[in-house]
Picture 1: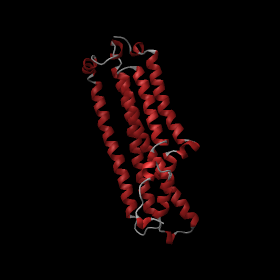
Picture 2 (picture 1 turned 90 degrees about the vertical axis):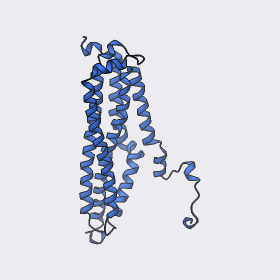
Picture 3 (picture 1 turned 45 degrees about the horizontal axis):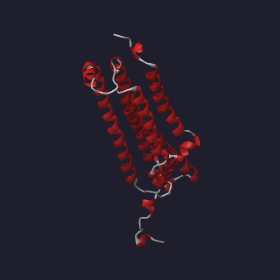
Picture 4 (picture 1 turned 135 degrees about the vertical axis):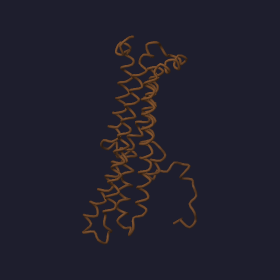
Length: 248
């Protein structure tokens, strides 16, 4: 039985290095500076700030409570699902021999690659453990958001405009960082799919990593949803006829 380090080829090291670089590098690219403000993260933060400012004008912020509850339900669902995925992967580690027999019919698989199955499973486990921490931290921060919304006084009782703006920005910021943690957990799912390519061949792993990075980039910077949020409507949306009672 060869040691795992003896079974790893330079192509395996390259594939894992590209995977880590794309995953961590994309987060840095997405969330830093002007680049982040141009994407979905920056645009949605502006809407969260608008939401926070409007919440102070409502006598009973029932709608805010309902919206926050919906956000928390989504995060809780993913956190629970991630636990099941981790448990399933841990169970697979103990049944690696069955995976060997299953993988013999997969093209490009070699005897050396079979000895790396447990290592490949561990990579997947680490990816989904990271996702679990992101989801649970996001859930806690949405709890903080509930506290801030509940503690926001009505505009009639605000000490002044400066206090109102500071309060709204605080609510919007905690809402954004909670949403960002949720997005990081979702990206971990995407890159977990890319990691499955390593079970076939390192080249497939590299190709899947680049493909996933391209997919998340297009959604964050070139999606129709982003254009709509920026009021840059795509043709099929622009051509929708406005009801007569709403026309100027």
